[in-house]
Image 1 (tube, helix red, strand yellow):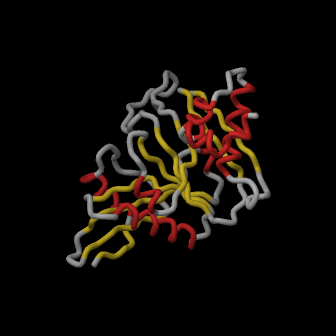
Image 2 (tube, rainbow, N blue to C red):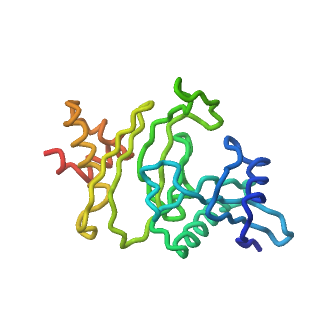
Image 3 (cartoon, helix red, strand yellow):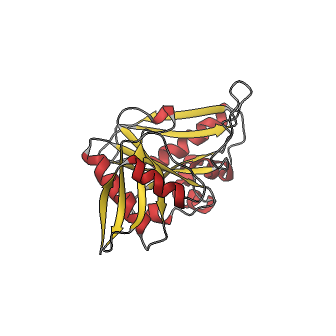
Length: 223
């Protein structure tokens, strides 16, 4: 028997400090939850706060800033699902989280999350504001869980060092046009604007699809 329980930030951070592979504690939060077994042992925690990216911090979005378990079967999936259920009940329209590029995102897929963007890794250390990086600086995948009827700006956000390029497209006919198709169109537009060759390989990289998927489903966009 395992159940979801509420946690304070201190309780969740203590678990993260002792168990997380590559992240330390977090400073602020909206809420935190944990998974507890029948013996009262904590098997995992999720901390939800404001989106780290300013462009996503619109007052209607939140972010799972820490996800940490001891390897208990399906613990991550249960926590992601519970985090979304809680965030939605609080009125949030979208919930984001990030995984390292080397991670498959299996738990997120199992919980119904969608790959939202590929984000190029960067260091927070700059000449203007020297800082010691305490987080992985490799490329990451951004995932999102959103209210089904939510009409929103689709964003392909690509970080290139200190240069942030954000492309958004507001759409109203959600039932007729898929989010992915809009991303493909935005990626093509971006490459043309930068006078780069529009290739399926490059577009697939920008939107997070395989070249085969792009050719099979979105060939008509390249004609």
